[in-house]
Amino acid sequence: MPKKILITRVIPAIAEELLTQAGFEVTVWRGNQVMTKDELIEQLLPCHALLSLGSNKLDRAFFEACKHLEIVSQFAVGFDNIDVAAASEFKIPVCNTPDVLSEATADVAFGLMIAVSRKMFYNHKLILQGEWKQFEPLKNLGFELTGKTLGIFGLGRIGSIMAQRCTGAYGMKVIYHNRNRNLAAEKETGAHYVDFDTLLRESDVLSVHSALTAQTKNLFNKEAFAKMKNTAVFINTARGGVHNEIDLIEALQNQTIWGAGLDVTNPEPMHANNPLLHMPNVAVLPHIGSATVEARTGMARLAAENIISFYKTGKPHTPVNSGF
Image (cartoon, rainbow, N blue to C red; front, side, top):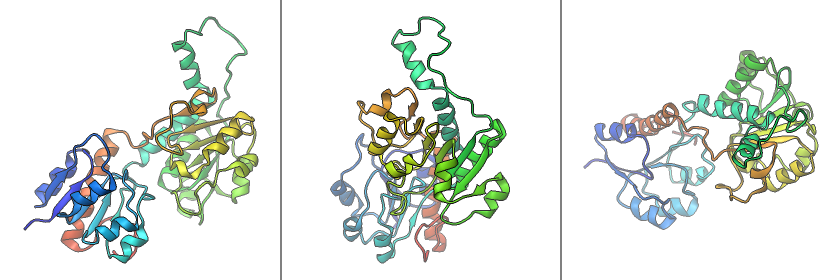
C-alpha cells in the first residue's frame, strides 16, 4: 500500500508530480481557508507524511494527536510554527526549504531599502489621492544610499546576497552581527563582525535576516530602536516576531529612527488601519519575499524531495532537528 501524503494548500504542481511519480498517494487541501487544527488532524488520520505551508501551528498537542506521522516537510525556510522539540520526541523529522528562496527574498529587502529611502510608496499614494500638483523643491525628500553603512542581523545566505547587492550598487560598508561569526561570508562580502550594540549604533540601514527564536523574539524593541541613529532605516524580511511592532510605531512617530521597510509584520496579516501603512517613511509588503515563480517552484520541489529522500534513504535533505 502506498504511503499517503497530505499537502495543506495548493502549491506549484511539481511537488504533487514528483510525489506521485515516486509512488505516493497525494491529497491536496483545496479549500480557500487555512484548515483549523481539528480539521488538519482529521485529514492526517490516514496519512503518513505532511507537507505543510507553515500556516498551521504544529505544537505539542498536534504531535501528540499525530504521533503516527513519519515526516513533516515545511514549504518555507522558517519553522517557528513547529514545536521541533516535540516532533523530535516522537521521532518525526522536520524539514524546511532553505537557499531556494534566498535571491528572491534578498531582492525584496533591497527593494524595500530603496523604496523607504526615497519615500516611494508614500509618493505613489499622493498621485492616487490627486495631491501631485506641482514641483515642490523641499517636499518629501529622501536620502541617497551611496557610501552608507548597511548593518545585517543574521549574515546567512540571504543576508550575504543583500550585502552583495548593496556593496555592488552603492558601495555601502557592511557590518553584521550573528550569534557566531561567519568567516566564509566575511570573505565573500567584505562584512565586518560587530557586537549588537555597535550594529545598532553604526547602521544607516539595518536589515534583519535571522530566524525567529526565543532569543530573537521582540529583540528589536524600544530599547534597541533608542540606540539607533535617528536617520536610520529598519528593514525586516525575516519574521515579524523579531520586532516589537508597537515599539517600532512609536520609534517612527517620535523620530527615534527615520524609516522602516517590512515584508513581515507582527501580527500577520496586518490590519488595514495600522499606522505604519500611512507613514511617509515606511514601506510595507504582505510577506512576498519568496513570491517568484522560481522560488516557489524550488520550494515545492525541495519540500517533495525531502519526503522522497526520507522514504528512499532514511534521510531527508534538509532536516532542522538533529538525528535525521
